[in-house]
Length: 138
Image (cartoon, rainbow, N blue to C red; front, top):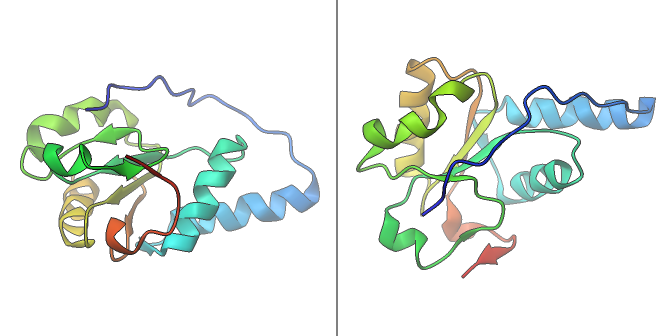
């Protein structure tokens, strides 16, 4: 299970005009309702390079997460205990969030709940971890 990671939300970036275009395209991706596997891989690389910030949230159950999860996942907030577990990030409503599950259905449900709760930007990994082509932790 994941613990709360300290995230610097006051981070500023100095970027060249070329990187500014990329930053804008990353922000556009984070404003989408759903993301493809390739788009998530792109965003994870940009986060690793400290170009953007977002939270990656696994909405599967603990036993599923124990079998493996997407490298870079920040929190496990299982669908079954969503209302109890969401308190882990309730102070991060202004930070973009990407949610995923096995097929995208449970994370879509959680995405809608988070939007209703006031989270500003919540994306769902379309088709979930099942079709994810990036690096996994097992």
